[in-house]
Image (cartoon, rainbow, N blue to C red; front, top):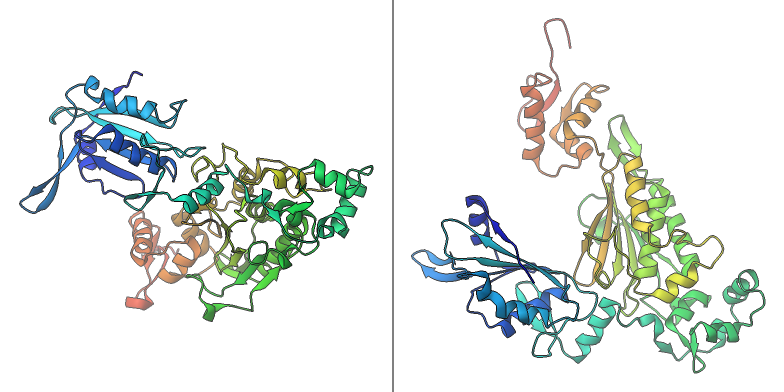
Length: 464
């Protein structure tokens, strides 16, 4: 393959040398054995992806360890590394490579961008690695099964359960479903045909979709917990408004009941707005789609319930399991991958299915938030879960929000400004006030200093 060479600026050169090794970045010397490098590539590909810079040394300087740029003499000098990377995957699409050149530095640094892989990628020694912090860790047999679940190569929805078969063959849920959707089918025959019953044993998917009370047989991994915290900070038991609600039932009912309960709690939640206290209002379709995604795409092998946490200024929906396959927080709007394909496909056959537009759920969420002029959702992948956060923060600039507030109020404090804009830092909020002051739009209220300081619209000789 032909690899392009990019000439970088002095600032970019300095930025490379100042990089810290982390969960997403690694630095290697050109002396690294290609086989050893494939271990790091495997770790990134099997985790969240990352970047490797080959051609950066770490030497002991006067003030401790220092980074030194020592690249390849020419592109051909990196051929052994490229060949090793190509042999890791038959498609060779798990990475991109670019040479970085700086006029005042020695040689070419090979910049590798490693993508999160759809499949499990082994190093050249046949072993599988994952990235944890700045380390690459080998994966044992038990962890390999966990990785297969994470990747969606194996799905816990296909696991067979030792439960009474009539839990799914003679439930009200399956009888009603078959009468309305497949009126000519017998439950046992149809469930066998869909591979929901195998060797007269029900699968996890069968239980979740068609049992009346799957939580009694799959405890701690098939319900939704709804919590209301009367705070904007992290949730602590002391701030709970009431005992957490547990929502149960087959997956179809679980989605609709959870959305209804969340709406009910949100209707009693107020936040300071430009016109005083106002009810927090999130688009119902945003809540519906995020909860649906959490239910359909969570990792059911993890013994933890979905959590819907409602704070004074945001809603957090936490779904057990990392993003499946090659999906990342960056490509989630443009890529699709179903961890539980049977559940996704079959729940779509229910009347008024919760996943009406299959594959478009998160796009709907972003569009719905934008229509209300609210900031887009934040998607965060944690060690064993995914958290989607809806914040009650306007898309308007902080300056616009401040002036809008002062259109109906005499003054504004730093605390009120932070509540309105979502800004967390007092100093950052001060900078907003200073910018408005410098444009002759605001002035400090005379006589109010320190923690009582306030701002008002600029008063001119002829009035405000």
